[in-house]
Structures are given as structure tokens and as C-alpha cells.
Amino acid sequence: MKWGMQAFDTFGVVPPGFGIVHQVNLEYLARGVHQTDDGVYYPDTLVGTDSHTTMINGIGVVAWGVGGIEAEAAMLGQPVYFLTPDVVGFELTGRLREGVTATDLVLTVTELLRQKKVVGKFVEFFGEGTRTLALPDRATIGNMAPEYGATMGFFPVDDKTIEYFKGTGRTKAEIEAFEAYFRAQGLFGVPVAGEIDYSQVVKLDLGDVTPSLAGPKRPQDRIELGDVAQKFASLFSKPVTENGFNQPADKLGVRHPVRPGAEGQRNGDARAVQPRTARPGGDGRQPPDARLRAGLGRRDRAFVRRCDRGQW
Image (cartoon, rainbow, N blue to C red):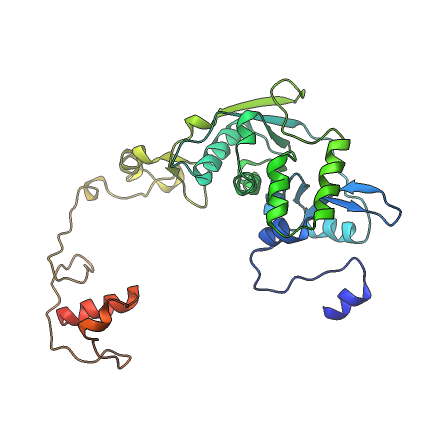
């Protein structure tokens, strides 16, 4: 690997242990714009061999995941062909309420775009609400493009992008060239409604986004936190084919009492653990005295509590 980096100008390797590849790409590898030897600038683009390559869309880089053959062709200098896509404009208005996270937002965006069937399309976010989103929030939404089905979820370059570049170690010269290029091309700043004629427009008021949850396999099946109990009850007896748990209805109301002192219940057995004489634990430790307890970590405090109860 080291030899390859010395032998080829266009070959670089990031050692393991620095984080996931998309984060390394976002924080370190992406330049925003590139410069040729004769001083010509051109925009940074990317095809990656992972569907979540789209995280880089958060800083205005046109990128998406491709197959191995396409990636090899690109590495050898060959073009990657694709049909001119429809571009869906996603207008964001308002501002996220306090306590609402980027995860809540991206689950809402995913649910909405799945309904709009954006498979094979580009999605570009615009509007006043987009300008309020920090770069990590934008990258989170871009990262979920495979879940809502689009080829990519793109965010234009603006002041938030410049701010992010300054905070992630890009040089002053790189940042100045990056900003100057996009301004010269008329591409700097998040468009407002009416500036661009999109193939289709989807709208979302950020103020309407609520705390919610969804499973990792089906993030489009979003459930608002206030509806979790009702939704769980309705899915309890439904078959797996309907995203249910396939459990007998009479089992839903069963309660399993656990008496104080019981470590837990196994197979419906609520027998309490009988205290025994304290002795050193399996690792040979003795229960520390009261003078040491204040500085203990979470695992050690749990060890002391077990010692106090005589449970081993």
C-alpha cells in the first residue's frame, strides 16, 4: 500500500481505525473543487462502491454508490454513463423545534420520499428551512438516500459548507478556491422557492417534525413516540408478512411480577436470589470500603451493590 502511494500520483490509502469511510470522506478526503496542472478548476465528484456514498452530498459533492465494474472503470479514467435523471426539489421551510433531532428529521424525510417514489431520481433540498440545517444534519439526510430510494440527496454549497470546511482542517487556500468557484458558477447558496424549475416539488415544514422511532431494517415505517403503545398493540398479533410480531392476542396482557431482590426473571420464574455470605468476586476483587466508593466507575459501583446484597 505504501509503495502504491509513492508510485502513483492518484492512489491514496487511509489506514484503518480512523472511522467509517463516509465520515473520513466527508471530513478529510473530499476537496470540493480540484485544480489541474494548468490552473483549471472543476467540481469534486465521486462514485463509491457503497450505497451510502451519498453522505458526501451534504457538502455539495455530486456522488452516489455504484457497482464494482463501474468503479474500476472510473479508476482507469473511463466515464460512468447514466441517463439524465429527473430532479425532485425538496423544499424545507420553518425550523426544527427544540428536542427534535436530525434522526427524527431524516425518518420523516425518508417516509415522505418513499411515498413519492423517487427511485432513480436526484433529490435536491432547497428553501429557507434548508439554510437552517447544520452540515452534520445535511449529511445525515444525504446518507439516507438509499433508504428513500433516490440516487442521491443533494445539498447546495453555502455558508454552512464553508464553515464546515474551516472546522475540518481544509487549508485557507482550498476554502477560498472552493467558495470562489461556486460563486463564479452561480451555484453558491441554497435556492429559494421559484428559482429552479424542478421535475417535481415535495414540501416539508421543519416545525411539523416530531420525535419518532423506526427499526433499522425499515426506517420508512416511522412511528411517532406518542403512538408507540397503540402501534405495538395493533402489531402484536399480526403476521410477520404485515410487519407484525405474530403473537397470541391473550399474551399481550400477561404480567410477570418480579419481587425485590430478584436478579431477573427467566422463563416465568420470579424466584428471588437468596443472599449468601460475601466473598471475593470471580476476578479476585474485595468489596472496597466507603472511602473509595465515591470515585468508582459504573461497573465498579454495580459490583459494590452486589456485594452489599450478598449476591454473586
